Image 1 (cartoon, one colour):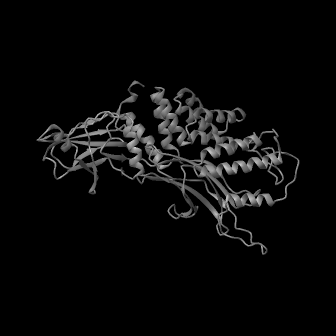
Image 2: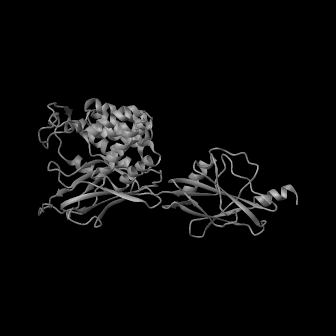
Image 3: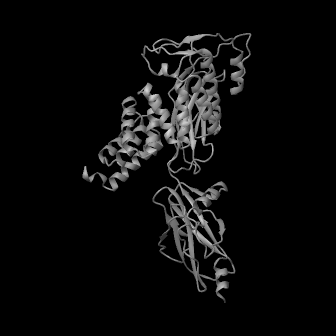
Length: 476
């Protein structure tokens, strides 16, 4: 048999079988190719899009192979794996080179790529090298998504009393969220946690939703934000309870239980009689009157004597631009949302809710310096505005400015001492700075917060377990 014939026989194909189910995937392995270090990453994105990434919530993986009937008999096998999309490879020593399938135990969550190298009397397949594309992808994901409620506005007497706004931000430790992973629902506070009713599903990981509360809903209500990743891990976070009064029945009005679109809300607003002129914004210590425009900054500074003057027409234009920005952001149209938020701020620079959401959208796009600038702008006016402190700390962590993040999180924790997410991040930052004792104390504080979700407690406990196992506190 000639050498070219042997090379052709070697590249006939290898089939990998992963998991308990007999799922087969044939992969051709060529020789003599110059590897591309980014080829694995591109292959993973394609495999993810085509649904060819195995999603497992357990660490034990069964790996097997099959060969073309015309290939030589297999006399032994080697198993290689990568955890960085094929840039580097390690060999997993098989207890029995002829075992098929073989068992692989993943000690850490994350993305794994696998390739078998088979040996026969006629030759051997090439071993994977830097840039080689795995024959099979497996995502080991045992961690649920993490949920933060960024915004929660309950109905007030100053409005029609039937609209609620909730905003959220969902992240995942293994970057395995998938498309539109969020569902929001509600339940009566007196009912069990399983007795929920759907509000909306298929929402983005960063979003905001305006719920027109149906007329048949009343009582003590709790709203839930739930997220699920590709592996099926899920968690939820519930708001505090709030009271919805029974709808007032007016004989001349027909109430329709429907979800209002943003366009219909704007049209209704435009039909409302407007009064021109300059409006003095209500002081934070006063109750808002219907004919006044209240900026977010005035509401945030309770007890402030400062009055903010806003042209009513400009304030209304800013609110419409903000609503449009939120509308686009909920659909993942972040660039359009950014333009709308900037237009809202051009009309009303004191509209800090718009500025904070602008910063959050920039941060989601990894435009970190721009996001930090917007957060800092808010904090120059109100250094106790917790959402801006939270966002700024995340931006600083992304930039690995741990000292700055440490200071920002300290400020946040003085305002929100029972914030488990803030304690978790504070512990991480302490560890990055070499403060092992501080990290341990912060992670322990995260586990003791009453409102910490199960997944967040699990993340903190895992860090504490690693801390103990590696004896990181020996030098304390």
